[in-house]
Amino acid sequence: MKTKWKATALKMGELYVEKSSLTYQKDIGEHLWIPMWATALSEGGYNVLIDTGIHDLKWVEDNIGPCRQQFDETIVEALKRGVGWSPEDVDIVINTHLHYDHSGNNKVFKNARFVVQKKEWEAAQNPIPCQDSIYFKELFDAKAVNYFNLSFVDGEEEIVPGIKVFLTPGHSEGHQSVLVNTEEGILCVAGDVSNLLENIYENVPAGILTCTKEIYGSMEEVRKRAEFILPGHEYLIKKYQSSNFPSIKKSANV
Image (cartoon, rainbow, N blue to C red; front, side, top):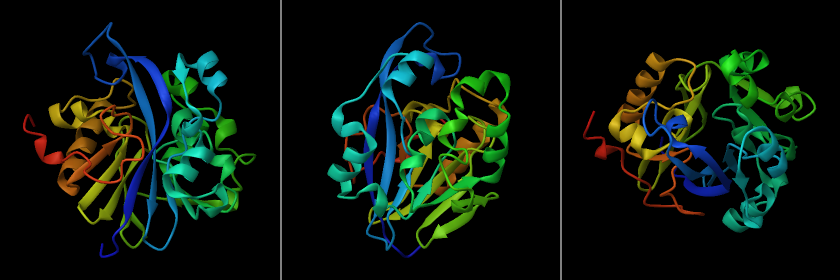
C-alpha cells in the first residue's frame, strides 16, 4: 500500500434513531441524531467515493423515520464543496453495503465503476425479512446502475494501489469495509460494521444485524488491520474532516 490517499468525510444528512439500533441491547429508549457519512478518496490517481448517501429526504421520512439534510449535505453539493468534484468526475464508487442510506445516489455516477461484494448483491435481491425495508432495489438495480459498470468482488481485494476492500459481514450479509493508505496511517472506512466509535471501542455490535457472531469477528478484523477508523454514523466526525480520524488503539475494553 505505497500510494497515499486523502480521505474527506462528506455528510449526507442526519437520521433520528433509537440508539439501541446502533448498540445491541443497550440504550433502549434513548434517541439521538446521527450523521450519514460518505467518503471521498483523492490524491491517489483516481477519484473514489465510498457510499452515496440518501436519494430523497421525503422518502426517508415517509419510509424510515425522521431525517434532516442541509443543502451542502446533498451529494452533488457535498462533492463540490468537499473535494471540488462533479458526479462525472468520480471514477470508482465503493458501496460498503446496499442499504438505502449507503447506495441512495448510485444512479448519479454515470461514469463510475461500482465495487460491491457479490455476496451483498445476492442478499440484496432477496433480503431477510427484518432487512427488507432498508433495501430499496430502485437505488441499485439496472435502472440505477448499468450492470456492466458493476464489479463484483469476493472477499478481500485491492481495488487500486492503496485502497483495499475486505468482508465485514454481520450488519448485512455481504458488508465490506475499506482500508485506505493515508499519510497518517491505515484508515478503515468502516461502513456499519462500526456505526459509532462505541461499537469498536467497547465491542458492542450494531443493533441492526444479520448475524451477531459474524459482526464480532468483523470488528476484530478491523482492529487487526487498521490504525484509524471512520465509522458509518459517528457524530464526533466533522463535516469535510480529512485528517486526525479516531485511533483504533483506544479499544482498551476488548
